[in-house]
Image (cartoon, rainbow, N blue to C red; front, side, top):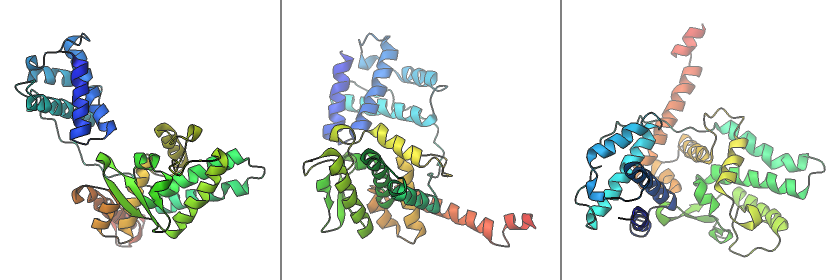
Length: 314
């Protein structure tokens, strides 16, 4: 059986029937192609019903020293989903990955940027063009783009991909809200503050000076030639901007964590944060309550005179 045609059909199933994102579908199919290459010696002559649980275990065992537990789990899940689909379509009689059990991953608290740190960065990027004498229009554009990227990610909690695909038509200035296309093409509406609304207007004026006439459906954050900014460019902008912070990770997703943590620390209820983030289950959002409590514990340990840390200092 032609393995490439099979994985293409599975990709269509993930996207069209299960409404999985393109990134998720590509990752699953990449895992499956790697397994088939390993199994057949890159010959692509694949016999689905000839695969055993021992084959799957051997493949994962060989990858164990090279990959993280999270990556191994995903590869097992990819094969499990692949064979589940083949059983539904009558291609394979059983699922050799169904009984593969991997150790549970430790639950790690998300990384976030401290409020004073992100506010300092936003103030710096906002005033930078005006403070630099002789700054060119190009420099103004790049500085303003960095500022609006950081501001939107921190102020709304949207995902990196959601920001990349955001267009002018998604911003409703009269209602003060933005429409975001999230995972599985699920749309949600997020309210925006007046200050952010004005920042977006200012950014659009500068962006239009850089690119000239743009369509009404233009990407809010353009990259090369007016196309949506690339994932790598967006990631590198945020990583560089957060370099001076105490956060252990520097990425767009860290600002999503920062948004959620700031909301909960300021007294927002969990349901509201869930809607902002576009989570399907409130259980996903609850991890930020643990994060907020951890921060509360650190503040107590460093401040209260009866805490253990304070007693050690005496």
